[in-house]
Image (cartoon, rainbow, N blue to C red; front, side, top):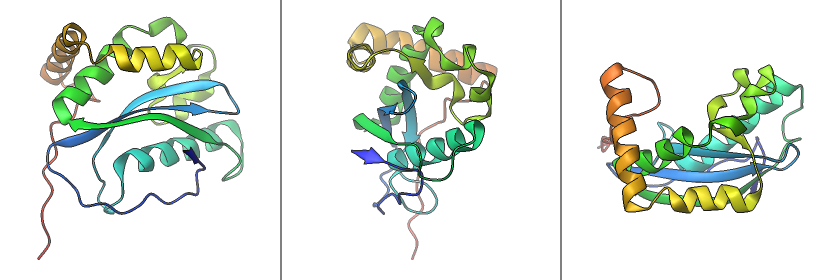
Length: 166
């Protein structure tokens, strides 16, 4: 799936306690983003696709591009229980420090999810995604999530419960 910043995410029926784990490539920059999104946002749209388009807008703003100039290729998007998705995502971020894009260009600091962009190739990005779901790595990720929550560190939300409108 190729997305641009002006693309609209489809509306979905929110599911309590679920979240998305995704990997997408910013084609013009050759960087990969490994991230988390809640199942749906307040507007009722697909959370994973919303996060990709929001990040594209942030990158366009930070680097001086016009809306729709940059393209994201979504390589993986997995729906799962919030706690497992977070554990997998946090495992990846704890084990890929040296390739973070924000270490090499300060403009990344203006982008939402700034610490989740990596300079690597597609094979490496996909291998990290798949490897994060190994049982032992999920356990490591669970420990990271618990530590961050206990310390009040941003980025490890509790499972979301959606209210049903009458």
